Structures are given as C-alpha cells and as structure tokens.
Length: 95
Ligand SMILES: [Zn+2]
Image (tube, rainbow, N blue to C red; front, side, top):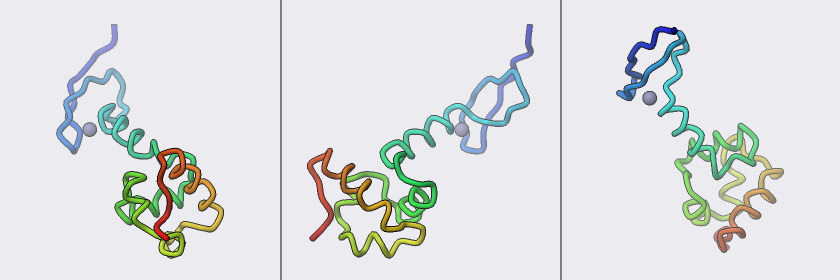
C-alpha cells in the first residue's frame, strides 16, 4: 500500500499524491485546456499567443494577419494553421 499524502500546490489546489512528483493535477489540466485551441501550433507560436494574452479564437480574430506576424515567435508557417482554426469557428483575421 502506497502512502498518499495531501499536498497543496503554489496555486492553492489540494491534491493527493503517492509519489514525490510535484505536479499538481489541477494545474496540469488547466495547462492542457489552455494549450488546447492552439495545440496545433509550434511551441514558440503558442508562447507568442500566451505572451499577447490571446486565449481564444475570438480574441485572435481581433488582429490582422500583419499584426499577428509581428508577435515574437510567430512565423509565417503558423498563419495557415491559424486561418484554419479561425475558419472552423466561422471567424477570420481582421482585414
Ligand atoms: Zn495546482
């Protein structure tokens, strides 16, 4: 029988872990759902979205293609992916 100890992560989530793994499952889930919509993008492009506080496609649609390309870490290669994501929601980049 393994020892399960209650832990509290730095965000205040309570969770039980039997290992020494410091990963909080609640935070992990939050991270996953955050990366969710932009998961098809490269890691630098995902970070660019985060750095510019873009967490939804609706927010992304407020920008023009030119503005998006100014984001650090976001290259032209990401544009077709972003356009596809937007069109799936019936959205598009600002003209
Ligand atoms: Zn947590």
